[in-house]
Length: 291
Image (tube, rainbow, N blue to C red):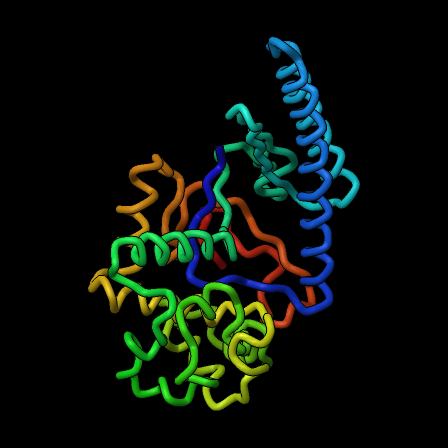
């Protein structure tokens, strides 16, 4: 199956364009999920599922993905399914690079965006099971000595569990005008202009969105904090932790940190022309460098 490239942050479009993309992705995911579920019922209802039925699923899944690409006009996509009996399949459609005419394949790599939160959460839970972390301890246990910590909204009440479940009341730096302004000014720099702690600065001294554990609000910033907690508790880099715990044991050989401009096999990204960050419409070069 295709394995995403890990990334510490995510690139978003302007609010309207981002909403359109998320709506298309959600619709695509739900339709593929329904189609796969219906076929799984067909297969599991057979006393002895045949290769012909499985072949029909593969063909129908590919046809559905092709139809969605044509209907919504996105450049390319990959999708996978796993049935209750463990049968798995993957499909690709469209182009990884329109201008170069490079087709999307099941081996094409993509920036994972918020899929990376799956690894953050899994690592935190794994460390909790070993007694290295406690999900209900306040975050100050690990980050209280940082100079900026007391400027976090409700800094003295947030636990790891609050961060993991988006119930920490923290704003999301990704959707702040100040962040968009800085990204549009710095994205051309060769080195990473936004190391993890610099992202947290965008929400310092901002009022909390609600009382801790009394609501829900998606926040990328919270997961940056979890990564810092993981590094403080283990004395190792976050990437080293997930490589040892998940990537190597599970054979996820196409998954790697997006911590450099050149990422082999990376599919091109395409942005709205009026995106809030001033990014070029195409976010990669022919050499798979990030623009």
